[in-house]
Amino acid sequence: EDQVTQSPEALRLQEGESSSLNCSYTVSGLRGLFWYRQDPGKGPEFLFTLYSAGEEKEKERLKATLTKKESFLHITAPKPEDSATYLCAVQPYGQNFVFGPGTRLSVLP
Amino acid sequence: DAGVTQSPTHLIKTRGQHVTLRCSPISGHKSVSWYQQVLGQGPQFIFQYYEKEERGRGNFPDRFSARQFPNYSSELNVNALLLGDSALYLCASILGWTVEETQYFGPGTRLLVL
Image (cartoon, rainbow over all chains, first blue to last red; front, side, top):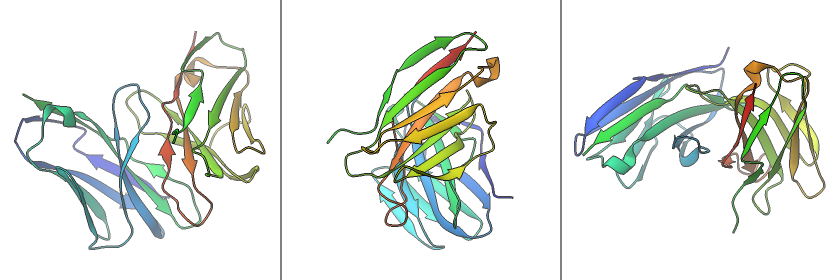
């Protein structure tokens, strides 16, 4: 069965304190891994798609990396506006998305 | 360009009632997916439609049904509502079946069942 886990469940950082979020997955065959950001009461906002091990993508203070078993979302010098829930999802070949439970990030000024 | 739109934004129903949620995808996108997100959890896949045909169904009871119209908009219907159906219902828009799989989400419909 395809599964996605995310850690930590919640993370509190001081402004400027860099850290990483983890997404571990078990799938029969990975077509793509996706990162989304979700603000309370709103729909997820697309951040990145990663397709193969070793791939990296960056956007502002965020950098996503992918290995054969997990993905990391690195946040460099975060700001309070980066506070949100970060969701990881995998798309197995021929199947639909499977989302992880998310990591709730709080960045304190 | 308009993003994914969903209506209504909020809805309150009582147990046993029926509800219809609506979604309009991004212009040019031909596929939509529906998700249920319970508070504190990640979205759970319900349905995917492409060119008006069902292309995937998640592990949800038959009380849940959906359809896609010729203009690619979609409806999600839930019959005989239960308290546990209270959730944020998300619609995702997808360009096509194989060309591009990134899903772009709408703002969601918050359903409360009393």
